[in-house]
Length: 601
Image (cartoon, rainbow, N blue to C red; front, side):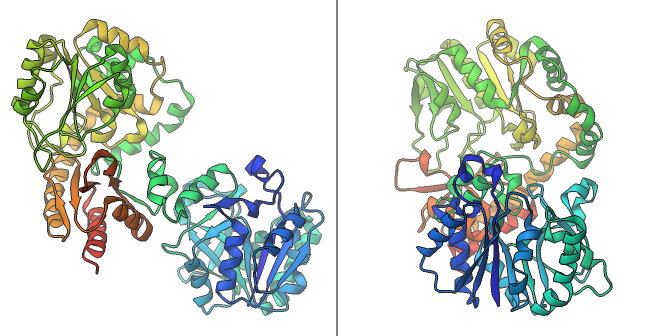
């Protein structure tokens, strides 16, 4: 079995990265694509390697000569790489294809060893390696039959999004027998080139062959194996995180989202509602997609009006933000607080935006605290504002409404601003715990209430948050501070229809609370982990015998599960993680992974 690598292209979409090097010379994790591929090929004992080179071919050959590859390498030059497509490069290797069975590789791929193992282990002589289509993929797709026969090749120009669930993407790795190349593939390839020229693609020839009765090439489906095709800088960035050896979890988390580009990833780091929105709400947005896409959203006044309807608050007392984070920035900008009281550990955005902070660290082993604890600590301190996140993040500590109202009264008596963040409050067991009440805020103009709609309503992609206050000067500032179109039409439309789905929301919260109790009980049965009680949609856990960084790295590398490493929040020898609470199916996957890693199964 020989390996044939097509490496003649210019890789123009990578811009300056390929200005003086062929595409396979770009690096992922400090290693070029071609070096990684060649060492993988050598590991599996291929008899020889044939490389079709073109653009910057001499540099490529000179570099490969330094690698010490022992497998024989033959080079074939494509002198008109800038005028042709891959059908011509492959035709140049025609005599090689009929000399031995071959595995054909595109040189812009990165993949784990198991991808080659999967292909070589299958006894079928002619295979197209495929994976289930995901939104990040581009290029030729396939439609498969029940027995992995290829029903159709679908080029990018014929791609139909309505049929995407039926599609498989070619990985651009193929296994061909020499008999198939001699008797079928090359004759068709020659005829196709003669009819349509050399600016075509070799996959189109395979499409013609699959239209014949008893076509001799089948598909081989990948399952959980990792691979990526690198066409532009975004692809390079994604691949660098997927194939990082020791920084994968870190590289994933500093992306702050966009995880649809990692379709096999289970995200237990970011926090949403697993049971809302319902499918009918999603379908309603889909039905209006075109209008929402091509039309401007409304300005601040209309969005505040929509929010006021949903939360039963006067329009002048509420402002809508592009997520709670936009409003936090704006509120702290207005307050210019040099002494902001914060509770640690907690969500860092408030402290990061303040000019100065005063920290309260609970002395309890589980980081719990009461209203009395907060009052006792800050009572004789000079602070201009106090932040209370309830339930707190990441501890999950929760103060009941009566406790919070003690802080409302105390802060009012002390002339201290109270910034009350109830982004996770809807998940608590206490009924009617919100401070977003018209009479309450009017009686307490020193309160500023922040709420992330994204988290509790499960729509982080819409980027919605609200701030509520009866302080007229503050609200005028916030409304003037945000951009005129700070939220998009999809977020506005969600607020327009949200009230219709209130009963669905209550049902979702009920389902969530039941699952939280079950998940908590199951986590507590695992060795070497202590789970802290939580009224939010996450659990903070303490680890024993393993560091938080080590477990986070293991879960992403071995199980494709992303959790939150909390080591940056603690300056002691204890190790903590935060695990989001999802639906039963996904929670069970985390449970199994934790059992495996913490009990050394």
